[in-house]
Image (cartoon, rainbow over all chains, first blue to last red; front, side, top):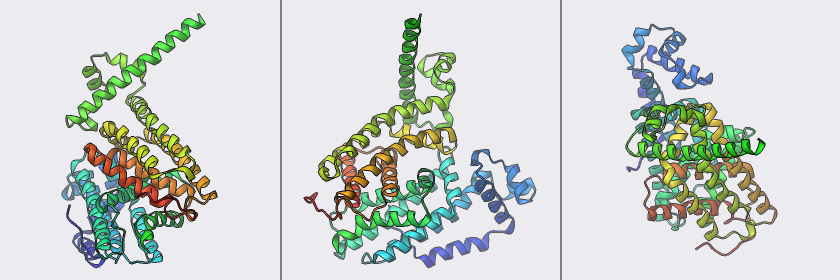
Length: 215
Length: 217
């Protein structure tokens, strides 16, 4: 595992650079797929025909840009993952002395980034059972988030701010796993939860587990 | 006549369980051998099990129903661990008790980690199975939620926690732990993961409550 030390500015630059390279047609196809997913259609049931019809381009044009619809999805999830990781690192690159209000803001950024890309992330999970590149992309995403949080915990422990009894790597695995699974499940498990309540409840757990004991 | 009917339906139910367990073991073997979701179908399972396709369909209407049955079986065992653990009076809960229950959960799902992971994959594109998987998760969440409410009323659980959402987050952690974090873990690693997970639950719920108890360490 390599620790990710991407700053928010760097990540934003990566996204912007990708945006410059992307052509209009490319963006139109991505937007079309997003709209179809947002309508609630499962990714497996969406055809290339539907995508090109929605985007208003020729079928042959699609194949100039992408081998198949899975590749189009991966290009979208690459951007989604970059944005979510940028939000994660904006939290984990902060000093471990951060106040609870500040943690709440940063956790809020992570939650909002995930929710904004919720349909794309759900589709990646859906295809990762048979699409190896998507599975790798998702695995690396989790590993990057875990490494960033682990580094944050370790530096806090080194500075004497966080409890030395926290198992930095394993606790990072549990917190990242809980957050990812919870964000994909919560809207369906607790249908009445407001976005604020979701952010506050997640912040409370992270605060109690990492920061609260030592101050 | 009535007793005869009952007997034959008992036999059918028993036989269905046998077929379910045999096929679940075959799916686990196939996954161990590197098979993916798309490699698995009724033909493959029936051939490996040495049964006719028609036998499969005597007990299950389709693959989804078989997956549901396999999931119910694995989760049923785990659910009773969650239920028993959180039925404990929160004031009497100890780090050790929680650790034992979590280790049981992780050890119990460990042997089925590959099958569980595959079932969650199937559920991602199969709304029928997805609904089915959410049922025991919602029940587990309710057990933990009640535990939090009780503990808050007696001052042994952090009063700032939202009982329902906190329970949902922590059950999500257990769920992901059961098939991702502990997959391929050695017994020692499993124990250390259980300790980290117990710490997650302990610090969240009890450590910062108004009424303090002995330190977990």
